[in-house]
Length: 102
Length: 135
Image (cartoon, rainbow over all chains, first blue to last red; front, side, top):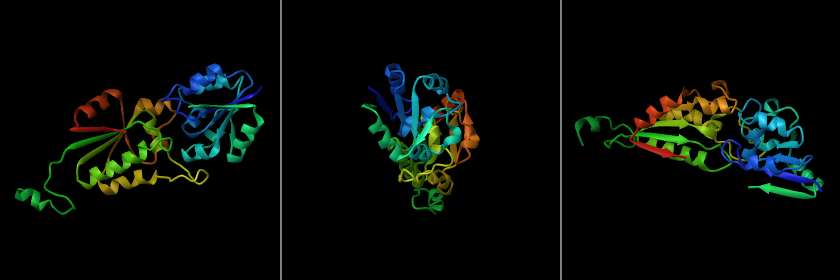
């Protein structure tokens, strides 16, 4: 069974990302949307944690939400993949279970 | 009303008490309504010719990120409003140094010039106010 984890909260304000990373199985996918996109940036206080996570998890970022917040691909950690709304749909179809961490 | 306040009455509102208002912005934009609502209330304070300061703290510093582009998400991009604050005589903008650093940001990332303050300086700023509103 493959799982897609969706995180929509800022990692600087909430513990949602931490919980997700604790319980996500190796090989799972994490999609960062809304304020969750801030977790994918280089040079922040959570970058190190995300670099570790990227060794065992696939990490995707919703591009419309990233651009809305004034960021783009050049600011992302290596290994993070951008998806658009169509890509979001494809991810939900490609995984057996979708867990939205609220 | 004294003669002095009458003379100052060029604007919409005159003769009232002027208080020092600090608006503390701690939320990222777009993920919640706080950032946009804060701007609305700041403009009301400015319309009543109050002594307005804005402080950007924690995720609030993301409100000032340059280059916000809502074309793909189809949301309302309200970031140009921060540049318009000057026209309402809202010129005292402050950002927390540590909040910027934790988020990998520098002054160059910001859409408007701000004064970057240390935690100790922010303590003093807060202590000088008559009213503090948190968003």
